[in-house]
Amino acid sequence: MAKRLIRRVLGVKKRLAEEFVGVADPDFHTYFPLPATQEKAGYHRIYTPAEIRRARQTLQQGSKREQLLPPVLCVRTPKGGAGKTMLTSNLGSTLAMQGYRVLLIDGDPQASMSKIFGINTKKKHIGDLLEEQSSKGRADFQSAVHEIYPGVLDIVPSFISMASIDLWLVGKPFREGLVKKLFQANADFLSRYDVILVDTAPSTSLLTFSLMVAATNLLVVARLEPQCIETLDQMISNVQELEASGCDQFDIRIIANGVVAPSHPMSDSVESAAVALAQRFPEIIEEKVLSLSPSFVRQVDLYDPSQCGTVIEREPNSMACRQVIDLAKSLARHYKIKLGLDE
Image 1 (cartoon, helix red, strand yellow):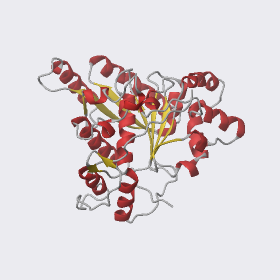
Image 2: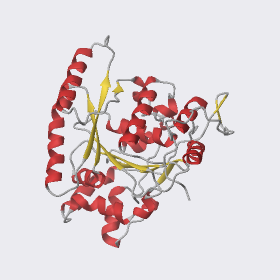
Image 3: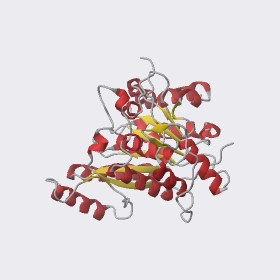
Image 4: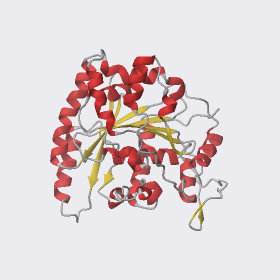
């Protein structure tokens, strides 16, 4: 099937653009006069992520990152349907709109994140890169990358054929470290990004373990329902086993998803789950939460891919978008995501 990319209006209106430019310096006045692009959203001019990036670079007068590889964040969930792909795609899109250069890696054979961005392709995925690295000594990372937002957001998409990579990994020694080895071997290429976000399959597969080891930064999406909270213990146990086997220590942040208003019919159950989550994991739970919102449901259209898109693209004035923006800012601070300087 041929690759299909969706044409988007890539940018935000003045209010958000001014806010995003101000992210570079908390003391900087957020109402920074950006030169508007010629592209319009209705009768309003919009500001592209590339323009926001240049404005922030001008203000920060910084230098290149000390480390070659940027922070790698692996998004996991204790059970399917918790909002893992929704979080990964929206975080990637929002960080890119803020001017960060982001690489998304779709590590789920279902390719849900790839489809959100309008990509349906049988070309290279992360499993192909692992095999290429093993057979040739070096993988061509560039050949697997698809551009989403010019200059700031790229993706290594997935396809159903990636499901077979676990069979290939079974026979490999030190298989948990193969993705980390792949990243290190391609550090020069990956250093152009400010952050890498990895979406994973909901099941616990060999590829998922290898992606986790490569990242060591885990974003765990916990839907506020009893079953999801219960399965978190098993996920934390898996992480501890990896650390005991000699892997680097993991930095875990748990993000609560599915907050509802007090008037909602399920408010009592959601509140009980939120209390249980806070009591069990008080030191690693993220203070910024995501509400149960139809905005997230509307970002995927099964019948018309041209209507797919993240909330910052489709509903930038929604409460859901504001929550994602606040979460992106919080995580950027926690993981020390820095805006690099372009060559």
